[in-house]
Amino acid sequence: MDTPVTLSHTSALILQTISYGYRYGFDIMDVTGLPSGTVYPALRRLERDQLIQSKWENEALAQERPPRKYYRVTRLGNEVLVSAVKRYPLLERLAPEAKTKGR
Amino acid sequence: MKAQLTTLSQCRMILRAASWIVPRRARAEWRKEWEAELACAWQIAPKKGPSSAGIRLRWRCCGAFLDAAWYRCNRGDLRHTSKHWSQTPTFLLLALVSVLLLFACASGDLPRMRSILLRPPYGDPQRIATVSRTGLISSAEWVIPYSWVEIWRRHGEALEGVAAYSWRPHGSVVMIGGRHAKVASVRVEDSLFRVFGVKPLLGQTFQPSDAQCSHNCLLLSYETWRRNFFSDPNILQKKATIDRQEAMIIGVLPERFWFPDNDVGVWRLADRTSFSGDAVGVVVRLRPRVSERWAEWALQRDISNMAGEPFWDSSLQVWPVQERIRQPLISYTMALCITLLVMTPVIWSGRLNLRPQCAEAVGACRWWSFFGTKSFLLLLILLAAVVELT
Image (cartoon, chains in turn blue, purple):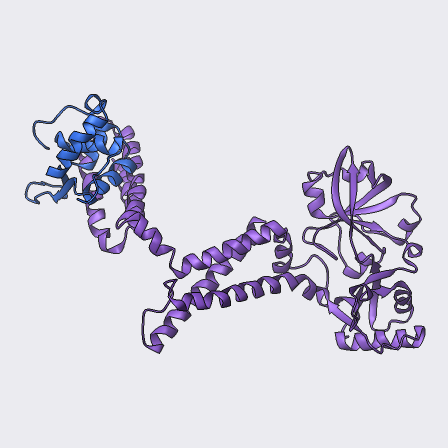
């Protein structure tokens, strides 16, 4: 990466939410309370900057519903998140509790 | 159950509408992701309360428009996109039209544009014309001596009506009911509005008997009445002055009527004695089936016979008022053409990315015809918007 990625507070919050195991757009909205018009463009930006990766759900696992796209934090994303947490000390308090297992 | 299904179909409709914003190559995947999320959210929605869940889902789906807009604008790189866009013909055309619109707004020509594009508020406009002298060096000589107007009034066989007006408007202060306005005023004969065949919006136009009135009789333009006097319906009964002299407002002219200039706000009644010895502007209504050329010849003949004017170095010109009104449109079109001509070397020099991509002549022709059609349509839409908004 040529230039270090500087995250906005909202992007950092979304990145941390994903790192805690909330991996779907609507899931992130539920726990952060952010609107869809903020969450989805932020997810696209994070993916463009290679801080998160998306993957389609296995069709066999998605029973009686269409497969969803889920997101996970990359190694670079984790590094950026660490610096973002230092930059935004209140982030830890705002972020939801970590999930033990993804839905 | 039926209401729930309606909510689901509404959400799908919102997503379908938003998906049109997304570039085609990414549309299917974008829609698949949103519809999957919607389906999952729908499965758990009734547990949280159907009505609030429905509203919430609809709101979330509305956010898809912002997501789609992001896809459309920022999928590559915003800076790259804007840089690329600034080199496209659409940007160039929009910039040109914006400059022209700004110029039109600043010069106060938008109301005039409206009068150009819409039907004028008087009858048989093709028969109304101004008369002036041509072939003279000084512009002060283009106007007509008032004595000629009297001759045409008595002998003009080509004319149905003739009226004189002071050819140069001047600034006046009009005060009506405690409110004052600085407007351009012009003195006209009572027959001017009969020549135009214009019906007033309020009150009446000048009558021959008004000349005996002790006050200055005034007619207001629609714009002056609307902007300076807030469309006061009782304006005719109010006390008025013009340049500190007592006056009486006898009427308000209809929208889009202007003469001789678009900034004239007040027409004052002038009696014949006040014009005698002066040079004036002349407006005439031609008889049916009388051409401008024939009218010029007939008017010139009358003056030669009655006043002894030889017309060695000059001649009379009968100029339809419609053409006079359309003159600014011609100026704007000329300005646009000149700007495009100036831009052409810039375009072909390669500084703007407007060179057709196809090397072959057929490809280039197709490209330019597409650009021309698109530009023309855009101009038409903008003109329609100008007409609607003003």
